[in-house]
Structures are given as C-alpha cells and as structure tokens.
Length: 224
Image (cartoon, rainbow, N blue to C red):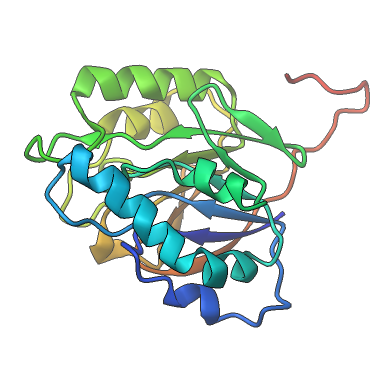
C-alpha cells in the first residue's frame, strides 16, 4: 500500500499542490493539527473558526485529495471534526480509534492524545490515560499505528513523547510494522527503522510510506 502521510500543517495546505494531480495514493493518512487556530484552546471559538476555515478551502483542497480515501487522528490543535467535514463533501474519511479499523488488508489503530504541555490544548492527557490508550491500540493488533504524538525517544524533537508506546513496541508482543505520527516539528520529514518498525514523523510535510499487507498463512487467515 502506498500512503501519503501528512501532519501538522496548521492550515497551510501547500503540500497538497506539490505532487502532480494524477499521482494518486492508495490512502492518505493525516496525523493531526491540520487546521489553524485563533486562540490558545478556547473550544467555543475554535470549533466555529475551524469550520469556517474549512469552508474557505474545501473546494481547492478536496480535489487535491485525488479521490483517495483518508484515515486520520486529530491533534491537540484540532477542535472541529475534520473527518465529518470531509465526508460531508464526498471524501471517504474515517477517524482511527484505539479499537482500530481494517483498510485493504491492513489494520490501523491509534489516537490523537498527547502528553500534558500546559493544559491549554485539546487532548492533553495524563500518563495513565496515554498508557490506557496505548494498551487498547496495541491490543487491537494493528499493522500500522497512527498517533499524533511520537513515541518517547524516537523522532520526538523537543517534546515529550508517549513513553507507553515506546515500551509497548520495545518489550511487548505486537505486529506493528509502521508508526505514523507528527506533533514534533523539529523532526518532521524524517523516518527511521528501529525494532522492526518504520517510524515516520511527517510534521509540516508530506512523506510517501509503503506498507505491504501481511502474508496470509497457507491454512488461511489467523487474525481478526
């Protein structure tokens, strides 16, 4: 599967115009903070503001999705429901949850929550909350983990990453082959292979990620 992974554009959608319009991915994955902000976390203002922003860009943006489906998790700067807005305009857009979903033979699971910063933004979460979300996501047996925040210690820039993800991928049993995220702009545009997992931070940019579906055993499917 050929995935176009985008994150942390904060309303600057220029990357969608950089690739030829006939270059169509199998799937777009957005890992949060796609929309701009007007305040520092006032949801009563942010929801209508982000919906108004979407209304001003959708007629340019939607055609540049090239008819490909979208999977996404929201970030800490996201307040309006982007998946719902895109579906309203005919895009096959779905939010990835810890319980996961299957797309073209690959299971995706994840969440948009981040470690606490200053208590101003959406989805700032405690260590216990992040640990619970990680446990649920890994328990769903994903091929691809999709989060807004990076794992702690891996392409996390100046931010605290999610330590529970690092621990789960280091010590726990799992089938994760790719982890897509953003949030840490300093490491945006970078990827690294570690512990058998391809870690991809696409903050402020677009990266092409290729993930093959799992092989089917000779005696038939054993998963899901």
